[in-house]
Image (cartoon, rainbow, N blue to C red; front, side, top):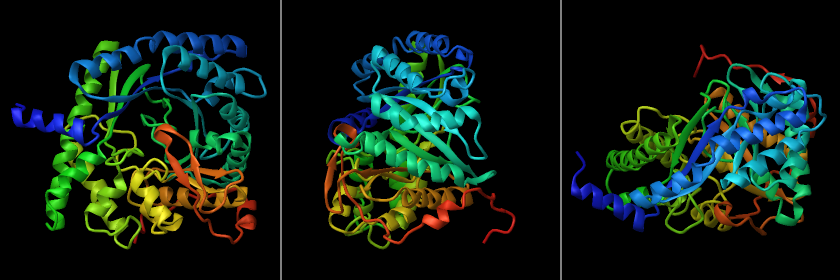
Length: 452
């Protein structure tokens, strides 16, 4: 039974603490759209997406009005296009990206994810074509997001794919140079990628997923920070308990929206992603939660421990509010999308090395990091390899979304607009990783019976 106090408390969290549902994402299987004629395959893809998602935006808006809960994004994820397009003999898949973009535009969603490939153990012909198509696809479309999984704990790290993705990111940045390399903000390189993640740019509809499904991602850094302000000076047991209780309330709201949306759209309810997703808005920052715990600035010694507590408490609190939890589930630490992170980088408190350490205990990885435009493809590949190694050895998801902003150098600021925010250009290690990345091959999967 929900008490009047809890209702008022939730209203306050929405009105004053930026609490919202970050996204309702409809996952759509395109496995029945394969065809040897690419034109026919694209027609089937377009028809299926526009049919199933026709009411997605309207239903989201109706729920917003009826319950007073802000739902920021309505999105679509589809089966990795490399799996669908390789039935035809076309040499590049840019036209498939254009079809996704057109379908997303017609139904009115913010983004569509799934221009993706899974190459952790090796490439198929379709995987190679898709990856080669990414730079042009992301530079000629507005709503299409792309992801490539290059490693898993069981397969190890595909270093050929890691090397290629460094080059793909550089090409994508160059083709979108007029927008600060914006195309790279729509491209994620994963290790241990989840198949039901509702958040962009890494969302796709996995092969083990149902025909059509609704996944929901919650937000709420402002609500957590506000709760912690009330227990200043208390011990960490109290801090953890406070975060847990707040995460429960946030997730309960996500569960309500997910159930309602799936019922109205007549499709399966998938998962609620227990994540704290920041925005560039003041009062909606994960970094400010860590600082509320007692750190002078995010990035100071102690930041990794604070983030570990936060991530764990969010999961413990959220799990009580929903039986179906998935996606990335944890705290996001994208630099350009978090006002506190931006400030910490600008003041020199937060470096890529510290962010890498933080990714050992959080849900994603090096996210929305802007580096100098002259950063080499080999250096970007090496950053991807480091992050994949953390994911593979620790049996968790990690990812890299990095933007080598053309013509920009350390200290410059690149504006992306909207939720993507603005990113200060960060320093990368100047020593070369060229010979390391040249080796290629596959780093073997780690052994887990001799852990220490």
